[in-house]
Amino acid sequence: MIIARVVGSAVSTVKAGKLSGFKLLLVQEVTANNKPLAERAPFVAVDTVGAGEGELVFVIMGSSARYTDRTEGVPTDAAIVAIVDSLEVDGQTTFRKACAGGPVERSVGNDRDQRSDQCDRGG
Image 1: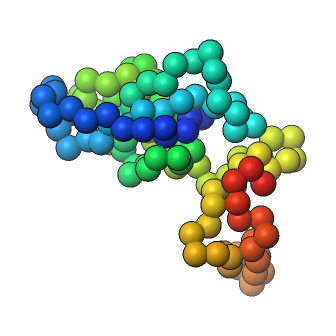
Image 2: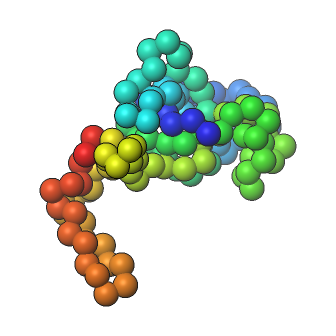
């Protein structure tokens, strides 16, 4: 899998029948530190998870892109399979998805975790 940012969309009214119903998104590969790889051109990927512009996603490439529940038999070599909530590299948060509507409170068992000041991109 690769890490990529959704940078746009592609619209195609005439396409292979098995691509019907899929949103086609333009993605740009990024590093684990959330920096664009300038040497890699953006590419089109089939969206299987409802991703939107600006989101960080995991993309599978090659024949593996045709092995998800939704893409079996679909003529694609790139599929978005997850929307990233956060990334951590060597103990440092390099990405945390922005929280819509302000602070997020998360319950884990009996512990409560207030993430109000950590809830932004880039940690």
